[in-house]
Length: 257
Ligand code: DAK
Image 1 (cartoon, rainbow, N blue to C red):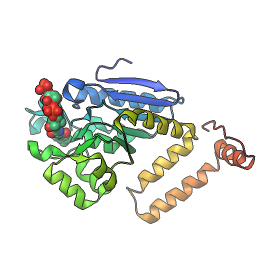
Image 2: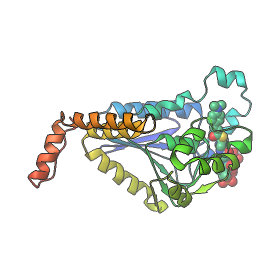
Image 3: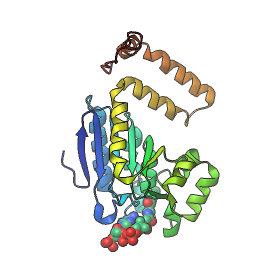
């Protein structure tokens, strides 16, 4: 597949997608969304891939939706096109997706990072939902995923003031899983993704699905879902392999089935 707005590579069982519009700080346009969706779908369908990383460059993960492209759009267009739906490819990806964020992750960039399963940030990362400063509001989940990640008080603060949040505040608030020095970001995230990709793929998919279910259901429903998924792991060859390897004091060798 040929891409113009992203760079795609594989590192063993890890798929790496680099947003690549550096002249505009990786501003997100429809072409990029389409390419990202295709790359994610290809990695999701590839049995040789166990985890996916989305990253940008040292200056920007993404500084938001492309304001120049959006500036003259009117209500008829955005409503008619159901603008934003093309970004839902991240949400539909079954394999774990890690956002490796250095520099700006603003507006749609912050929302794209939040669509991923977890965020690792370089200590120069800057998050925020500055849409209010340009006469609009978050439209890719900022007002919905942010309160779930950081609570109402912080979400209101960030969305209503449009201010930038540094990596440490983002980590303290629960938006970010880990903060690392910028020069170590890629290595740390690739190592994390490789570790995940080394585990049984069906087990990893079940864990991701179960954690996400916590956001969509009551505690009782979520616990029941988790219990059934846990039971389901006992139908896997990898459960036998993992537990036998522990008992036999050897390293397990998962076959992803
Ligand atoms: N879009 C387009 N171009 C952008 C951009 C963006 N979001 N962000 C930066 N650029 C471009 C700049 O215009 C500049 O281009 P040239 O002038 O060189 O041609 C280049 O990237 C470098 O940017 P700066 O010169 O501004 O760089 P600085 O280091 O001085 O400043 C900055 C960096 C990130 C603080 C600044 O660029 C900035 O404030 N950028 C905009 C951040 C922002 O407001 N992001 C939120 C975008 S709004 C919707 C749903 C969702 C959304 C919209 C609608 N619907 C349901 C309808 C989402 C909206 C957003 O994400």
